[in-house]
Every structure is written in structure tokens, then in C-alpha cells.
Length: 63
Image (cartoon, rainbow, N blue to C red; front, side, top):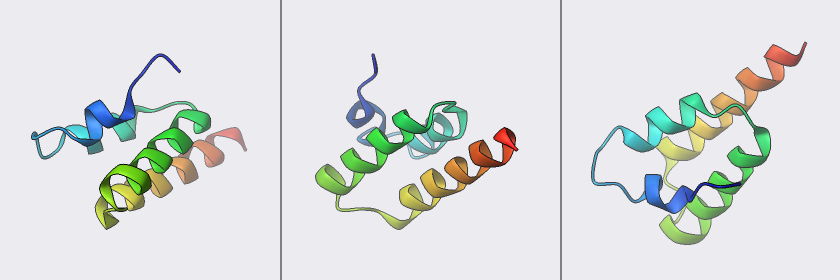
């Protein structure tokens, strides 16, 4: 996808992963973020919730 989700998800900047997730426009990229989060970081609730929320927003935009 031309982007490394782990780069954002591993950031020491507290809000950088969330800010990036909220700007994602592609559901495939969101899936990549979810997979990396689960595999590399154990599935932190705040990150998974942000991904789910963004996916819901993108689906609503398609309606």
C-alpha cells in the first residue's frame, strides 16, 4: 500500500497512530493496520476501536 502501518503504530507520540487512522480513506489500508496491530502490538483497545470507528465512517460515506 506504500505505507508501513508499524511505523505509525509504534510511534512514541501518543496521538500519532490515532491521527493517522482517522485520516485513512481506504478500507484495505485499515485492514492492514488492524493486522499489524494484532500481530505486533497485541491488539490495544484504543487502536482497534479507532480502526473500527473509521471503518464504520467509511462505510457510511458510501451510502
